[in-house]
Length: 349
Image (cartoon, rainbow, N blue to C red; front, side, top):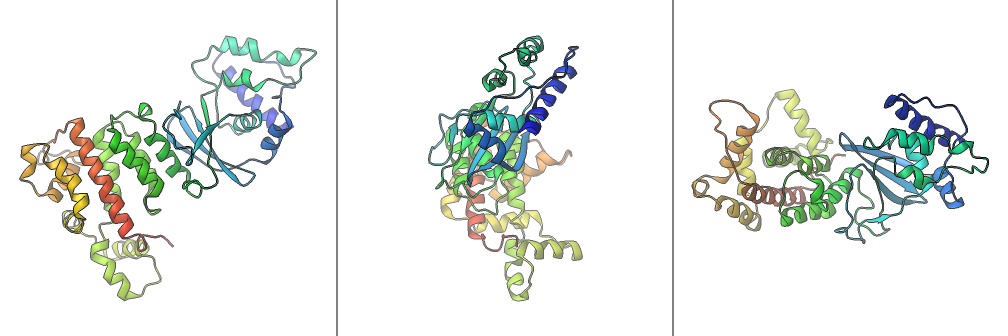
């Protein structure tokens, strides 16, 4: 506990001196904790940390065999959260001490450093000093959201990136792109019940992208992963290889340089897609008359090339926000369908 408090204040002082000309004298400073907070300080574990944005951190916490989440500097709202899935809780001094000692939460860059210096750095000189009140410190550090996952939450056994995908899908004000409510609802549903073989780092990246074009590209990368399935599924089965399908297809590509042609792979995917999913693509292609005559898989591939490649042969394709939402919505359904359909063969052993 002493080491954690010492490290916490060293970190705060280092940031203060880096951002100001103040000199801080040494002293014994610590954060006051109640007995239950001391228990948090001593026993909590941090299995994983992920930084979805340069100034935002997601931190997974385990305490007394329960799972919690800390979100740093996201200013997230809890008004749309399903409390059976995840709920916001009150932070406590023990958690804050650990976050500071592990350098996971920093001073907010918007604070007045003179105010911090005067209000925080001299408290330990008071004869009645019995530790800093953590509420005094909280107002100077980056905003912190603290969540608990109920025991029966569908996210309880899932990874940090998947949980963050759900949280951001429920926080449209924290997103740059103007997603429709039904699109965000599908993102949230995918985060809750989608296949474990989906890369939720890419899902999260698509949500946090700065343009719809890049949202589409991140989802396209997920489509790429299922390109080999229609070509190699039966070959993998008859080969009786001990390699997983992903390892098998990866080795085949590395050794023989064979890989499916993208447009042909997309054609196979679109041909095998259920009618219920195709309705969402129909909604997009019916949104503009010039789209209706195009084969859907060819337009999908053409759009990807127009974004990725800067060549005179690739005309720029301009879509409205409404059209992007329709296409992204359809792509999410396509991904959910095919990753669910090929769940077993896409598993990594």
